[in-house]
Image 1 (cartoon, rainbow, N blue to C red):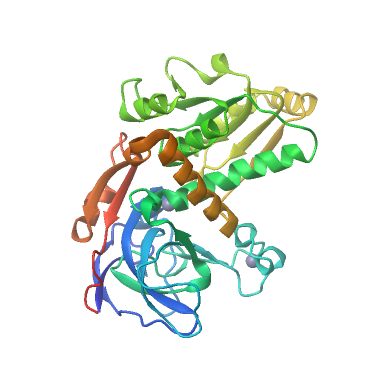
Image 2: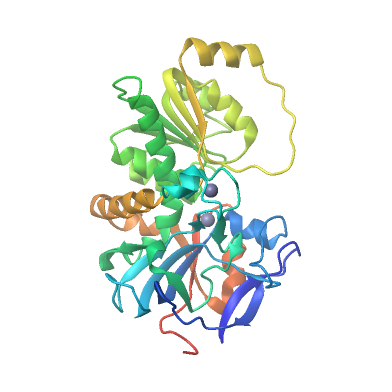
Length: 362
Ligand SMILES: [Zn+2]
Ligand SMILES: [Zn+2]
């Protein structure tokens, strides 16, 4: 048995350490040690009881979907992996019906909604010292990226959104965006800022933290402009060729629609729960969207290719920005102190739980 952080889905604040079986790798699987797990709003929401599904028959769900893993033992029929290799686990699994996108490895575009996700939906997560995973759902990580590779999964989500924006635009003309805005300076927002700066764009990052806050300083240190939404509103700073919305605060998404320039693209990545009613100038939004040929789209999750792009970019960023990338990790906690990682402050970017140096209980 190994200790794991698990919840009873639907029961508020049920996250606790629980003993779970140590899985043996079956055919096509490897056993991995979990070196690090990043915590995000999804984990907090599952712990709050608003989200999450236990695997069939188990009354609990092991949390953890943002991983850094080390291969320990290789099961039958697995080639290309050896003990000591570092990897990140792919979160989503295709639906059993194998809908058209799932059938071609685009589970991120699943149409039935019956996909499973490690640590979120129907599949236990990584918050335990060791587990067995399908080798086909691992992405290789170069050893030198070990300090920051736990950012791969959240970055894969950003890679997809930006990739989709560029592909949609390329389908209609030779798009050369210059000015971008990122709404939100949390992990997704700051990762989006680095990605767009890396592509040579002029980037503004908007949040509600003061200019001297850590998030603002990280954005500026990377080369972005920081906009405190209380003082320098988006509307004055625009228009933008590309906006990535990463707060999930729906009124901001509607404001962003009116801050796009001609042919501008808006990627919505924030997941919003609950209900909100909003007054908008619907005619103006509609007219500007049409007359300026705007592209507005939603994006969630990522395909294998986006994980690979994330690892590629993390390497490029470490070469360009050095330890700035690692400064996005604002707290590291041992497994028994997992609560401290869940209790994030507004100045936290990414808190990480360091799970296993060695495989415990093997
Ligand atoms: Zn996450
Ligand atoms: Zn599907």
